[in-house]
Image 1 (cartoon, rainbow, N blue to C red):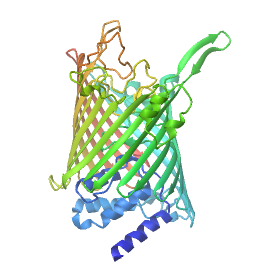
Image 2 (image 1 turned 30 degrees about the vertical axis):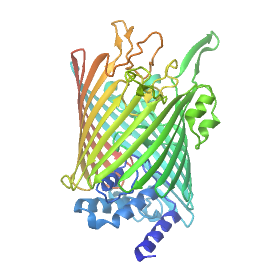
Image 3 (image 1 turned 60 degrees about the vertical axis):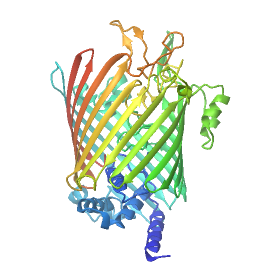
Image 4 (image 1 turned 135 degrees about the horizontal axis):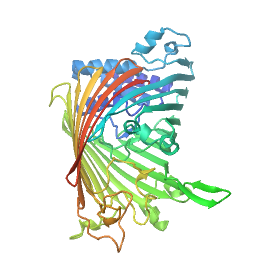
Length: 558
């Protein structure tokens, strides 16, 4: 065994000695850096099709990058040095403010090294406590409306625990307050999806995430609730996006050399129903069960080529199905043996880099796995429910060193992600929000994103999206005139709707969306995000223009 291989073996062994099985927030900028290094052929085997990764997995990728600094620009070397401080080989207990403190208060705020309010570590156990604080100022201006403004603040904490090399636990909880104009505050996803704000009328919103992870060799089992991103497009994940609220899940991972298998079973939310019982009990609230099961088998035969095959089942209104808790089963066949009650999907994805600096990616989803569209004149049938995405990424050496360019085109055919005779019950949604991209069926979207890294601390991005949507035709009183498959909550109705579903038929709705974002890393704990958005929404020759700006300051938040 060569010296380099011995060193890397010792490095990996020391990583697992110190566990490092805690998840890294999917919004952390280290993922953008690692993604760019893969496109440049520096980290050829790096896989981020499903996030988050663990701290140990990120650390190993950074160490691999450290071995390839000869291939890096000075800007990439600076970013690598920064993130190596963020992700050390082990947690240092002297980086704790309230225990064995080696930092003053100011140093804790502005240090680039990993640090916590309190942390402890010995040969087997480590745990930490960290405060979480964000503030956000929002300004919103719509056509023919006055300026709306709002101020949001969230405050809470995070607790993490690791034992030996196989156990990790994490708890995060925070509360938030929104002040000012509600129209402005509702542009923030945390407020928009808050039950407290939308159903009780109070100005407070909250959230909690947490999980337990067990990892041994090539196996990992996780039970918890945290954001999962699932898809080969770095910025617009196709299978599971950041659109819906987080949900509880059981997750099983297996990775060996070029092969990987990921399985997830999640507990989704249906809207609450309220029924009047009698004058004594008044209204009774109820919510029926809804679940998602999804899996992906990944194979990377070469360093520049990867494939993935996945399946998804949405089922509801009954207890757990053992069939969908079995990671090693073809669920489409299983659900037919269960009397075909559920909504099934089949996914195929791929990535390919023909040269360093250029990568293509693509995904196609078949809803209900119906291949009748292959028959003559069946492409425009209502049963042809397909969604697909194709994208590209370009970096140096094909562009300027600090510049990256990403492009993407998405088409979602009519009725895709809905389900006949089910209402919202079997749709591809969680509490009415799409699980994937924030798009309705019968939609095409083209996007272009330009990223420029001024240095390792300051990053900018410009995003443009052009969306065309064929909406269902509704009269002035709200009655349906024609269903063209333009709503995820209304599927094809046999005998009522036309069996022909032409793409983008119906009432045309177009959106031009522009966004400029600046992110500045002040320290390990502190970062600032400045964002401006401008959109033009056009329907029936009626343009609605919206200008939105926000300034967010995060402490231990991304």
